[in-house]
Image (cartoon, rainbow, N blue to C red; front, top):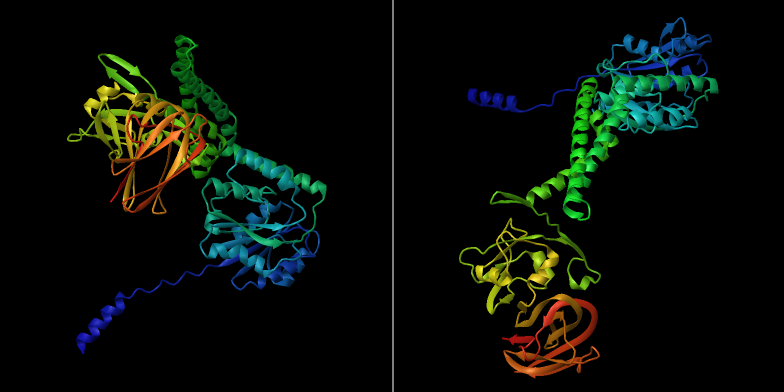
Length: 572
């Protein structure tokens, strides 16, 4: 029995129990200035929220019955003898309360509901945010749209709240210790800016429509002045004026320098009619400008970052000065391309940049992909024990109209086409004899567009493999594309192969089965076939070959009768 109790004790000790959540006291601060008509109603609504522990009305020098109405409704009232401004009233309430979470709500809202109050506070209780600010449908908002948003977009573009001057917000008290409370109407936007720069999690909560008194034009003028002053002061404090002014100028000049470097390099390698000396001078001037101003950008950015460390300044920097980043990326790509094309041999450094070819097919039937970027390809030596194979990139095969396991005939020698090895996407591996016949050297660079010229006259045996048959077509690669015709082979009424190629006028072509000549096809002067449908039987198999003249072009010159069969059908 004793051992049973010991074991049970250890088991119970090992069971993890969820630590009870610490109770968080919540206070609602209501700044009020001559709000005797609505303050009591606002207090009553807040009292209905079950998790609110304290309601404080800060009477900001009211001359009406605001104090009496607030006390009658059950709120704690703190009074300023004179009107000090909304920000000062909020700060007074914040300093007075000892609660963990504080919500600030205006005293002039006619249609406030407990649900609206709860939606402000609950995200903080649930750990989704450290500060919440509200957005809502209302008739006013002139200061927001005409003053706050344009200035915020200019100095703090990463701040994209719909209503930065909402007036109602909530926060943890420990977080508010980091915030600088403005004394007037600038308090709302000041909290939003400080929270963003300091990296505090702030969430905009939609509380629906609200109704309150429209401010007269004179009050809106005062409010706009205070909002502008707050944004400008914060912009100076956090280095955003420097970002827009000094750094903005440095970055623009850096872009000029980078652009000159790019222009100079492009001229050196691709523009023949501009003297080399001029292109070099442009490159050097651009390099000096870009280096000088990029250094100044870095120095000023470090100074600015020290003023306001955090991700927000980095986001603003990227958003405002994205063009310089793009220019640097373009230049780095160009330099890496030129370095990759550099060759040092016998004390001579040679830079021969080669670009890929953009291939766009007007007729998607000629390729699985209607658009692709191919090459350039680097020539290398065949792998040991592969003297009868050619390893060719898939893009090069598509350009030449061939495929893996096709046979390539070079100078009467046959080579099997194989795919490239992993990591050698653009490497063309050729046996020594094939390289000599094609006049290629190891490390030669071949643009995709030159493949047809290099392999012109090379014979190809292209195979279509099926379950019960293998269909081989013989053609020669030609560098000049010509109008081609298509054909389709049916065996026992099932399609076995579809292909295309160039048929020469007034020429005859032979179809063989298992190596035996069985059918001659004639291509006439008027670009038509003497027989469009050719049907015959071989060892009990019905074979049909249908020809169709098309407007597509091809580099596959099909073999004429006096050269060999152009089509051989092997039936098992």
